[in-house]
Image (tube, rainbow, N blue to C red):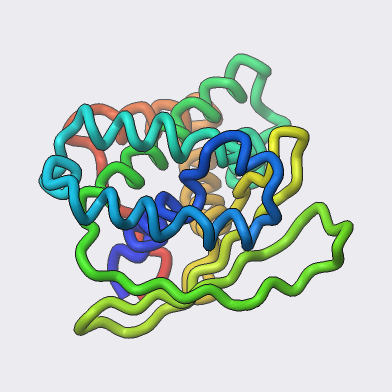
Length: 211
């Protein structure tokens, strides 16, 4: 299956775009289920978002999605053992560029929403768990049903996403393989430059995490 990252981004965008107070207090599965219908309604009704209006899409991503990610943890996990080779300044640059890459992916996903149907499975976690997986099935007309799971951690600011698994394939692991190759070829600076180039106009391409 091609470009599943766009579908996962869409589901995540519509699942975690909650008001800050709700995000801090709600259980992860309750948070997801409560806000999904409202955000889907906004996307369905807003023709500008569906048409890819850059300012509207960017505003939705910046205000509703970014606060619910642990980008530092995601970047460190994606860079893996090469993370310790980076200076603090390089680590900051990697986190910034990786966040920009994912934001562009989510922005494209939002403007591509049409008729996806999302079903969430019961949460299986201990009451005092600090890391959980929220599992979902996504069905779109004419396409194969897929599973999309969100690994989340409890932080002082509420539950945050640190990985996404599409049909069992980890987004972080997929990037880890790509990043390792860039470091082998050009070191940490080579990886930073690769991300920087990809994030510039004309450089963005999708990532296929499953086929």
